[in-house]
Image (cartoon, rainbow, N blue to C red; front, side, top):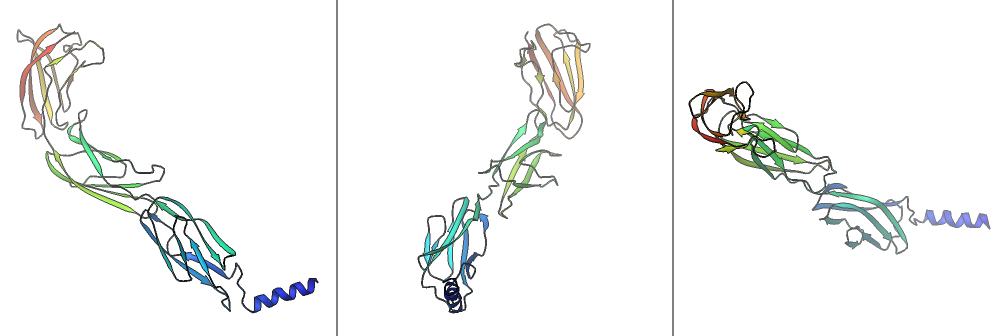
Length: 275
């Protein structure tokens, strides 16, 4: 009986009955981003083709029939298992065969850095759909600056308009780009009141400048006595005199003039010190 059973098996192979080793399928691409178009090809290496039906399941809710090439679009990120059923009784499956990632989004926004000056701009790419994917960032700024992080802090040399470009890509080979025109302004703004009482609220007189120009800052009492002076690109006064002693509450007069840099601004005014 064993000999007879082996004889039947050999006869089946000789007349071309398909086996799992003789039939397969493949895709022209298996990794990409949403709206990924994939073409599947059915392959039968049997000497004699005895396959009468091929039913496809592409794992995304779409199906197909036939031995012809099948073209399918995957619109949603995820992993997809693809299978074919031969002659309604034999199924060949490839688990997680197609991997679809979200398309990158290179949209970005920016804001001036009050701490570092108006010439310093913070650029931020919006969060990607799946942050677990190692995205690659490439920043290109018109003044020659570059960067490779999602958040970029950049200081421009002068006020003006600058083109800024960002390219975001992922391991699936997908990329998106964005080009924006950024206005960089020269500013010199001061508050008219502050309260250095160590409560963490408005404790310092902070001059909002471009962060590049060096300014001379002088403070005078109502009687005209200079009580404080500093030179720096970013100036912050804590309400103390040059010796570090706390000044009395009251009205003080200040003068701000550029010493080194390209700023056209000068400023004078009064500030009220409360405690």
